[in-house]
Amino acid sequence: MTKTAGSAWLSWMCKMSELKKVSDFEWVIPKTGAMKVPGKIFANEKLLEGIGQDMTLKQIINVATLPGIIRESVAMPDAHQGYGFSIGGVAAFDMEKGIITPGGVGFDINCGVRILATDIPIEEMKKKVKEVLHDITRSVPSGVGRGHKEKLTVQVLDEVLKKGAKWAVEQGCGVKDDLERCEEYGCIENANPDYVSQRAKSRGLPQLGTLGSGNHFLEIQNVTDVFDEKIAKIFGIKKGRAVLMIHCGSRGLGHQVASDYIELMEKKYGHANLPDRELVNAPVNSELGKKYLSAMNCAVNFAFCNRQLITHYVREVLKSHFPNNKNSLVYDVCHNIAKIEEHIIEGVKKTVCVHRKGATRSFGPGRIEIPAVYREFGQPVIIPGSMGTASYLLVGTKRAEEIAFGSTAHGAGRVMSRTAALSDLRGEQVKKMLNDKGIDVEAGSMKGLAEEAPEVYKDIDEVIKVSEAVGLTRKVARLKPVAVMKG
Amino acid sequence: MPYKFLEHKADVKFLASGSTIERAFKASAMALQETMTKGAGVKSTQEREIDVQGDDFESLLYHFLEEFLFLLDAESFLFSEVKEIKINPVEFKLHAVVSGDDAVNYQISNDVKAITYNDMFVKHDKNGWQCLVVVDV
Image (cartoon, rainbow over all chains, first blue to last red; front, side):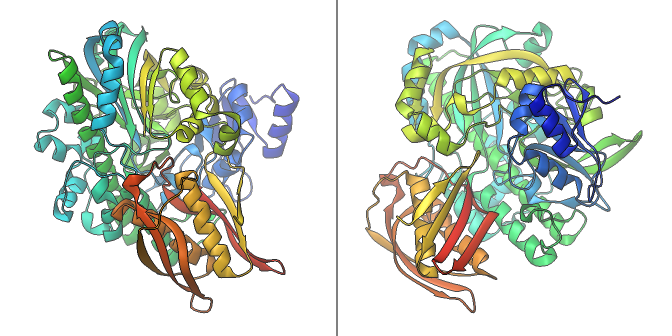
C-alpha cells in the first residue's frame, strides 16, 4: 500500500516525480515513459528533502531507461547528484541484454576505504598525536603535483595493475593477512594492462602510494562505541583503542581510464539516444564492454595497491612511536566499481553486472566472497563520515542482498557546493573548529579544508540510521577522529 | 579574467568567454588553473606545446583542458599561461604553447579528476564565444 508524504514540500516533490512512499524509509518512482524498471530510494523525509533539491531523482530515472537493467534503479540514503548515475546509485544489468557504463562507476575508480585496527589505547595515542600526525603527513605524500617514493617503470606498473595489493605485499609492504581482509582479496581478476592507455599509465606512474586531495583523507580515530561486541572482537576492534582510516582511490590513472573509455564508447555507440551524455555505455558482452571492465579492474588494482602502500607507510610511523604496537587490517572496501556478481533475481540465481557508484558492497553472512574469518558474520562495511565527523564500521546483511543487490551507503553525501562552502567558511575557521573538538589537522591547503568542512555534508548519523532501519547494514562500532590528514 | 564560477553542489562549474574562440578557450584554461591552484601565482619557467583534435568544439575543448591534467600528473607541470593558441575550426584542431613551472613549488588544493561533458557547451553569438565546463574534483 503506498502513501503520500506529509509535508507540503514533499507532496509537491512527490507530484513532480510521481514519487510514492512505500514505508518511512523507502520511496518508489513508478515506471513511466522510457523507464524499463521503477526507481527506488532508501531515505527518510529529511534525507529525501536534500535528494530532491538537485538532479538526483532525474538521474535515478535516467538509469532506469538503460538497456537490460534488472528490477530497479536504486539510490542509497546518501545519494546526491553525480555524472550519469547519481552518487549513491546502484543498478544491476543482464549479462546478455545489459550494458556497462563508466557513468555508473565514476572517474575515481575504486575510490575506497580501509581501517587498520591497533592495540594502542587512545590516551597513549593522544599524548603523541601531533608528532604521529606530522610524521604520517611527511611519509604519506598527498601526491598532487608531488613526487612519490616508489620509482616505477611501466613494466612494474603493469604488474601492479594485474596484482593490486598483492604486488605491494610481495615487495614486503604488508602481510598475507592484509590480502585476506580486502574486498576481492586486494587483487581483482580479469585485469589486462594492455587495455589501459599509455596516457593513463603515464598519469599513474608518479602517483602510486599517494593520497590525493579533494575528499580523500587519512584519520586517526578512537573507537567510541561498540554496538556488537562479538563481531567487533572478530574484526579486531575494541573500545578506546586507536584505529586508522585510509580513504583514497586510483588517482590520475583511474580518472584517465574513465575518460578514455567514455570517448571510445561515444565513438562506437554514440550518445544521441541517451537521456544524458554521461551515461554513454557499451553492451556488457561486447568487445568494448569487456575491455572497459578489464581496464577498470586494472584501476581497481592500482587503488588497492595504493591503499596497501599507504598502510605500510602508516605502520612504519606507528612503529617508530609505539614500537610494541600490534595492528591488523579490518577490511578494505570499494566505493566506485562495476562487478560481475551472482544475485537471486526473481528466485533464480543469476550472474549480473552490478554498478555501485558511491555505494558499498554489503553482503550478508555466508557469501563466498567474504573472507573465511568473517564469513559467518557478514562482510565488514566501512562508511566514513565527512572529514572530522564520526565514521562507522558495520556488517552486511542478507536483506541488502535481497533489496539492494548487496549494497549500502558509502558516506555522508554532499549538501553544500564547494563555491558556497568557500564563501561561507574559511579554512582557518574549519581548522579551529576541529581543534576545538579536540581534532588535530594537517591539510595541504586551507581552501581545500574549507571545501571539505563537515557542514557541507549530510549528517552521517542520519544516513546510518536509515541504512540500519531498512536493513542494508548493521552497526558494529562508531569511530571518532582525533587527528586528520587531508591531502 | 573573462570567466566566472557558477553554483554546483558537488563539483566546479565555470563559464568562460572571449571575442574569439581562441580567447574563450584560453579563458577556460585559466578557469581550470584557478580551480587547481586557487589563485596561487604560478611562474613561467618552462614551456610545453599542446596539439589536440576533436570531433566538434566541445570535444576539442575537452581534450585541450584534459591535457593540463595530464601534464600535471605525468610531468609535474603546472601551467601559468597560454602563450599562443591557434584553432582550426574546420578540422577541430588546436595548437597551443603554454608556460608554467614545476608543480612541486606550489600547493595544489584541488585535484581535478576529470573534465566532463556534463552541461558542456561552446557557443557563438553576437557577443562572442562562451564555453561552459563542469570539472569533477
